[in-house]
Length: 155
Image (cartoon, rainbow, N blue to C red; front, side):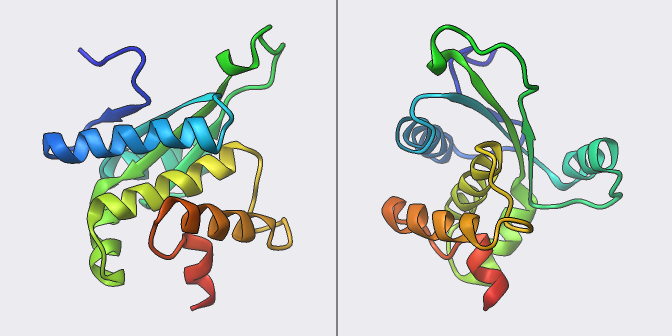
């Protein structure tokens, strides 16, 4: 059974070391990027990302990362108890992208987790005039990650 305090759920086989590394990265994101607010990250495959994309966005294809912000409602007394929402990542797509960009799969999953989390924080690279791209580049450098998704669009 999964740890109820865990920030990452794995539905794809990854080594214990990779799992620990991704869980530690999620904890770091919670501490440094979200100011202590919780989120949940699902690591799964193309089939599930396609199903989620079709069900919630009406797009019948797999993608690398999807973000699902928590519904708006009364805020808890303690802001840190508030969940920002959920991020779903395709480990299969992350592996392909990692090969394409010359880094490890777990690094790509971290890039995708950061990208999805910024969406949960209300950023939208399509409509924000570059605000998300700047934030993503800043966090990527601070966290020691390879080129961010929004930076790749310009390459």
